[in-house]
Image (cartoon, rainbow, N blue to C red; front, side, top):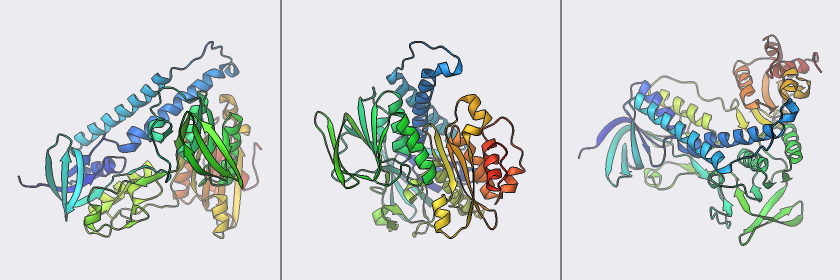
Length: 464
């Protein structure tokens, strides 16, 4: 049987792969997507979407427990944990089916199987029905994503020692849990399980939780999480994990050794690229520290082979993968797209209160030689925040003192992950404090805090 011919073959259907496929089809390319699991990749099935469904259940439960603060009386508030998990899985399934529909709508051929690059412009597909075929394509995009990273010497058994995947499937909250790693994944699961009664301890080797965030924001969130009953050990390194009746976690914390006992240990220390077993070794594609090396348009060192999303290295974010996919295929089509501005990537953590940021932290701005002008506005001074009972947090804006350029924006608070988009746009448009202030913000809204923070930077705050 002759090879089937395509303009573009994409290996992987996550938020990088499927978005690239749809955009390529819109640009007139005959496109195929190969996926060995479920359409949508980790994001739709085991990451972004189902975890947000879980976190919403936790948020709703905690709201119900504090209903009296809103003048409501709710008696006997309980939770059905298997139902919470099922809702999360149902949400993921609906999203996956939605992407299948979009691929079909845009005439993208979806092939269920495992793709392997076997030569120049050749991808062999071992289909899940045991058959196989070879596809020929002018262009091949690798979008195979990443999986949870593990700690050498610590065995993941999926029961007592788990990753984020198993954490989404537990049928009851464990009595106690140690979470290794205080990035977004660790913090979100810490918030979730704490809400349903698990005694949570988070261990982080860096001085702050959410180490890539602004230190002031991280410290405020840490204080909030501790108030909710979560134990947090920073500057602490895991030495050993052993299983038995309980899981024992040996750590070195500030020159002192300590042993923690828990029912479950969640390893949440980041991700590693899915670079194995699909022809990278023989194709000559260059790797660096376990990631595929690419340029601003997703091109590898091998002509006709591209890589996008998590497999191409940090930042490991779904929205970055999607944008990389669009930039990659538009460049293939000769559209001369604008490369991604790596200084303007929003980052979000969906615990409560939420954390969102874009651009430089205060520490980064100062260390790179900027004289900075900082504006802050606490949500305790926001009328809308008080009205909805969400006064934890603040907006922090970092401007260049000489030119007024917005260097970075950091938000801790309710709906921070929605509010950050305004500041990403402001940064794209090189907005100054005056530009934000002169944009009238509706009252009462949480977004007024952005305007008020800009006013604070110029020294004429109205409400603080």
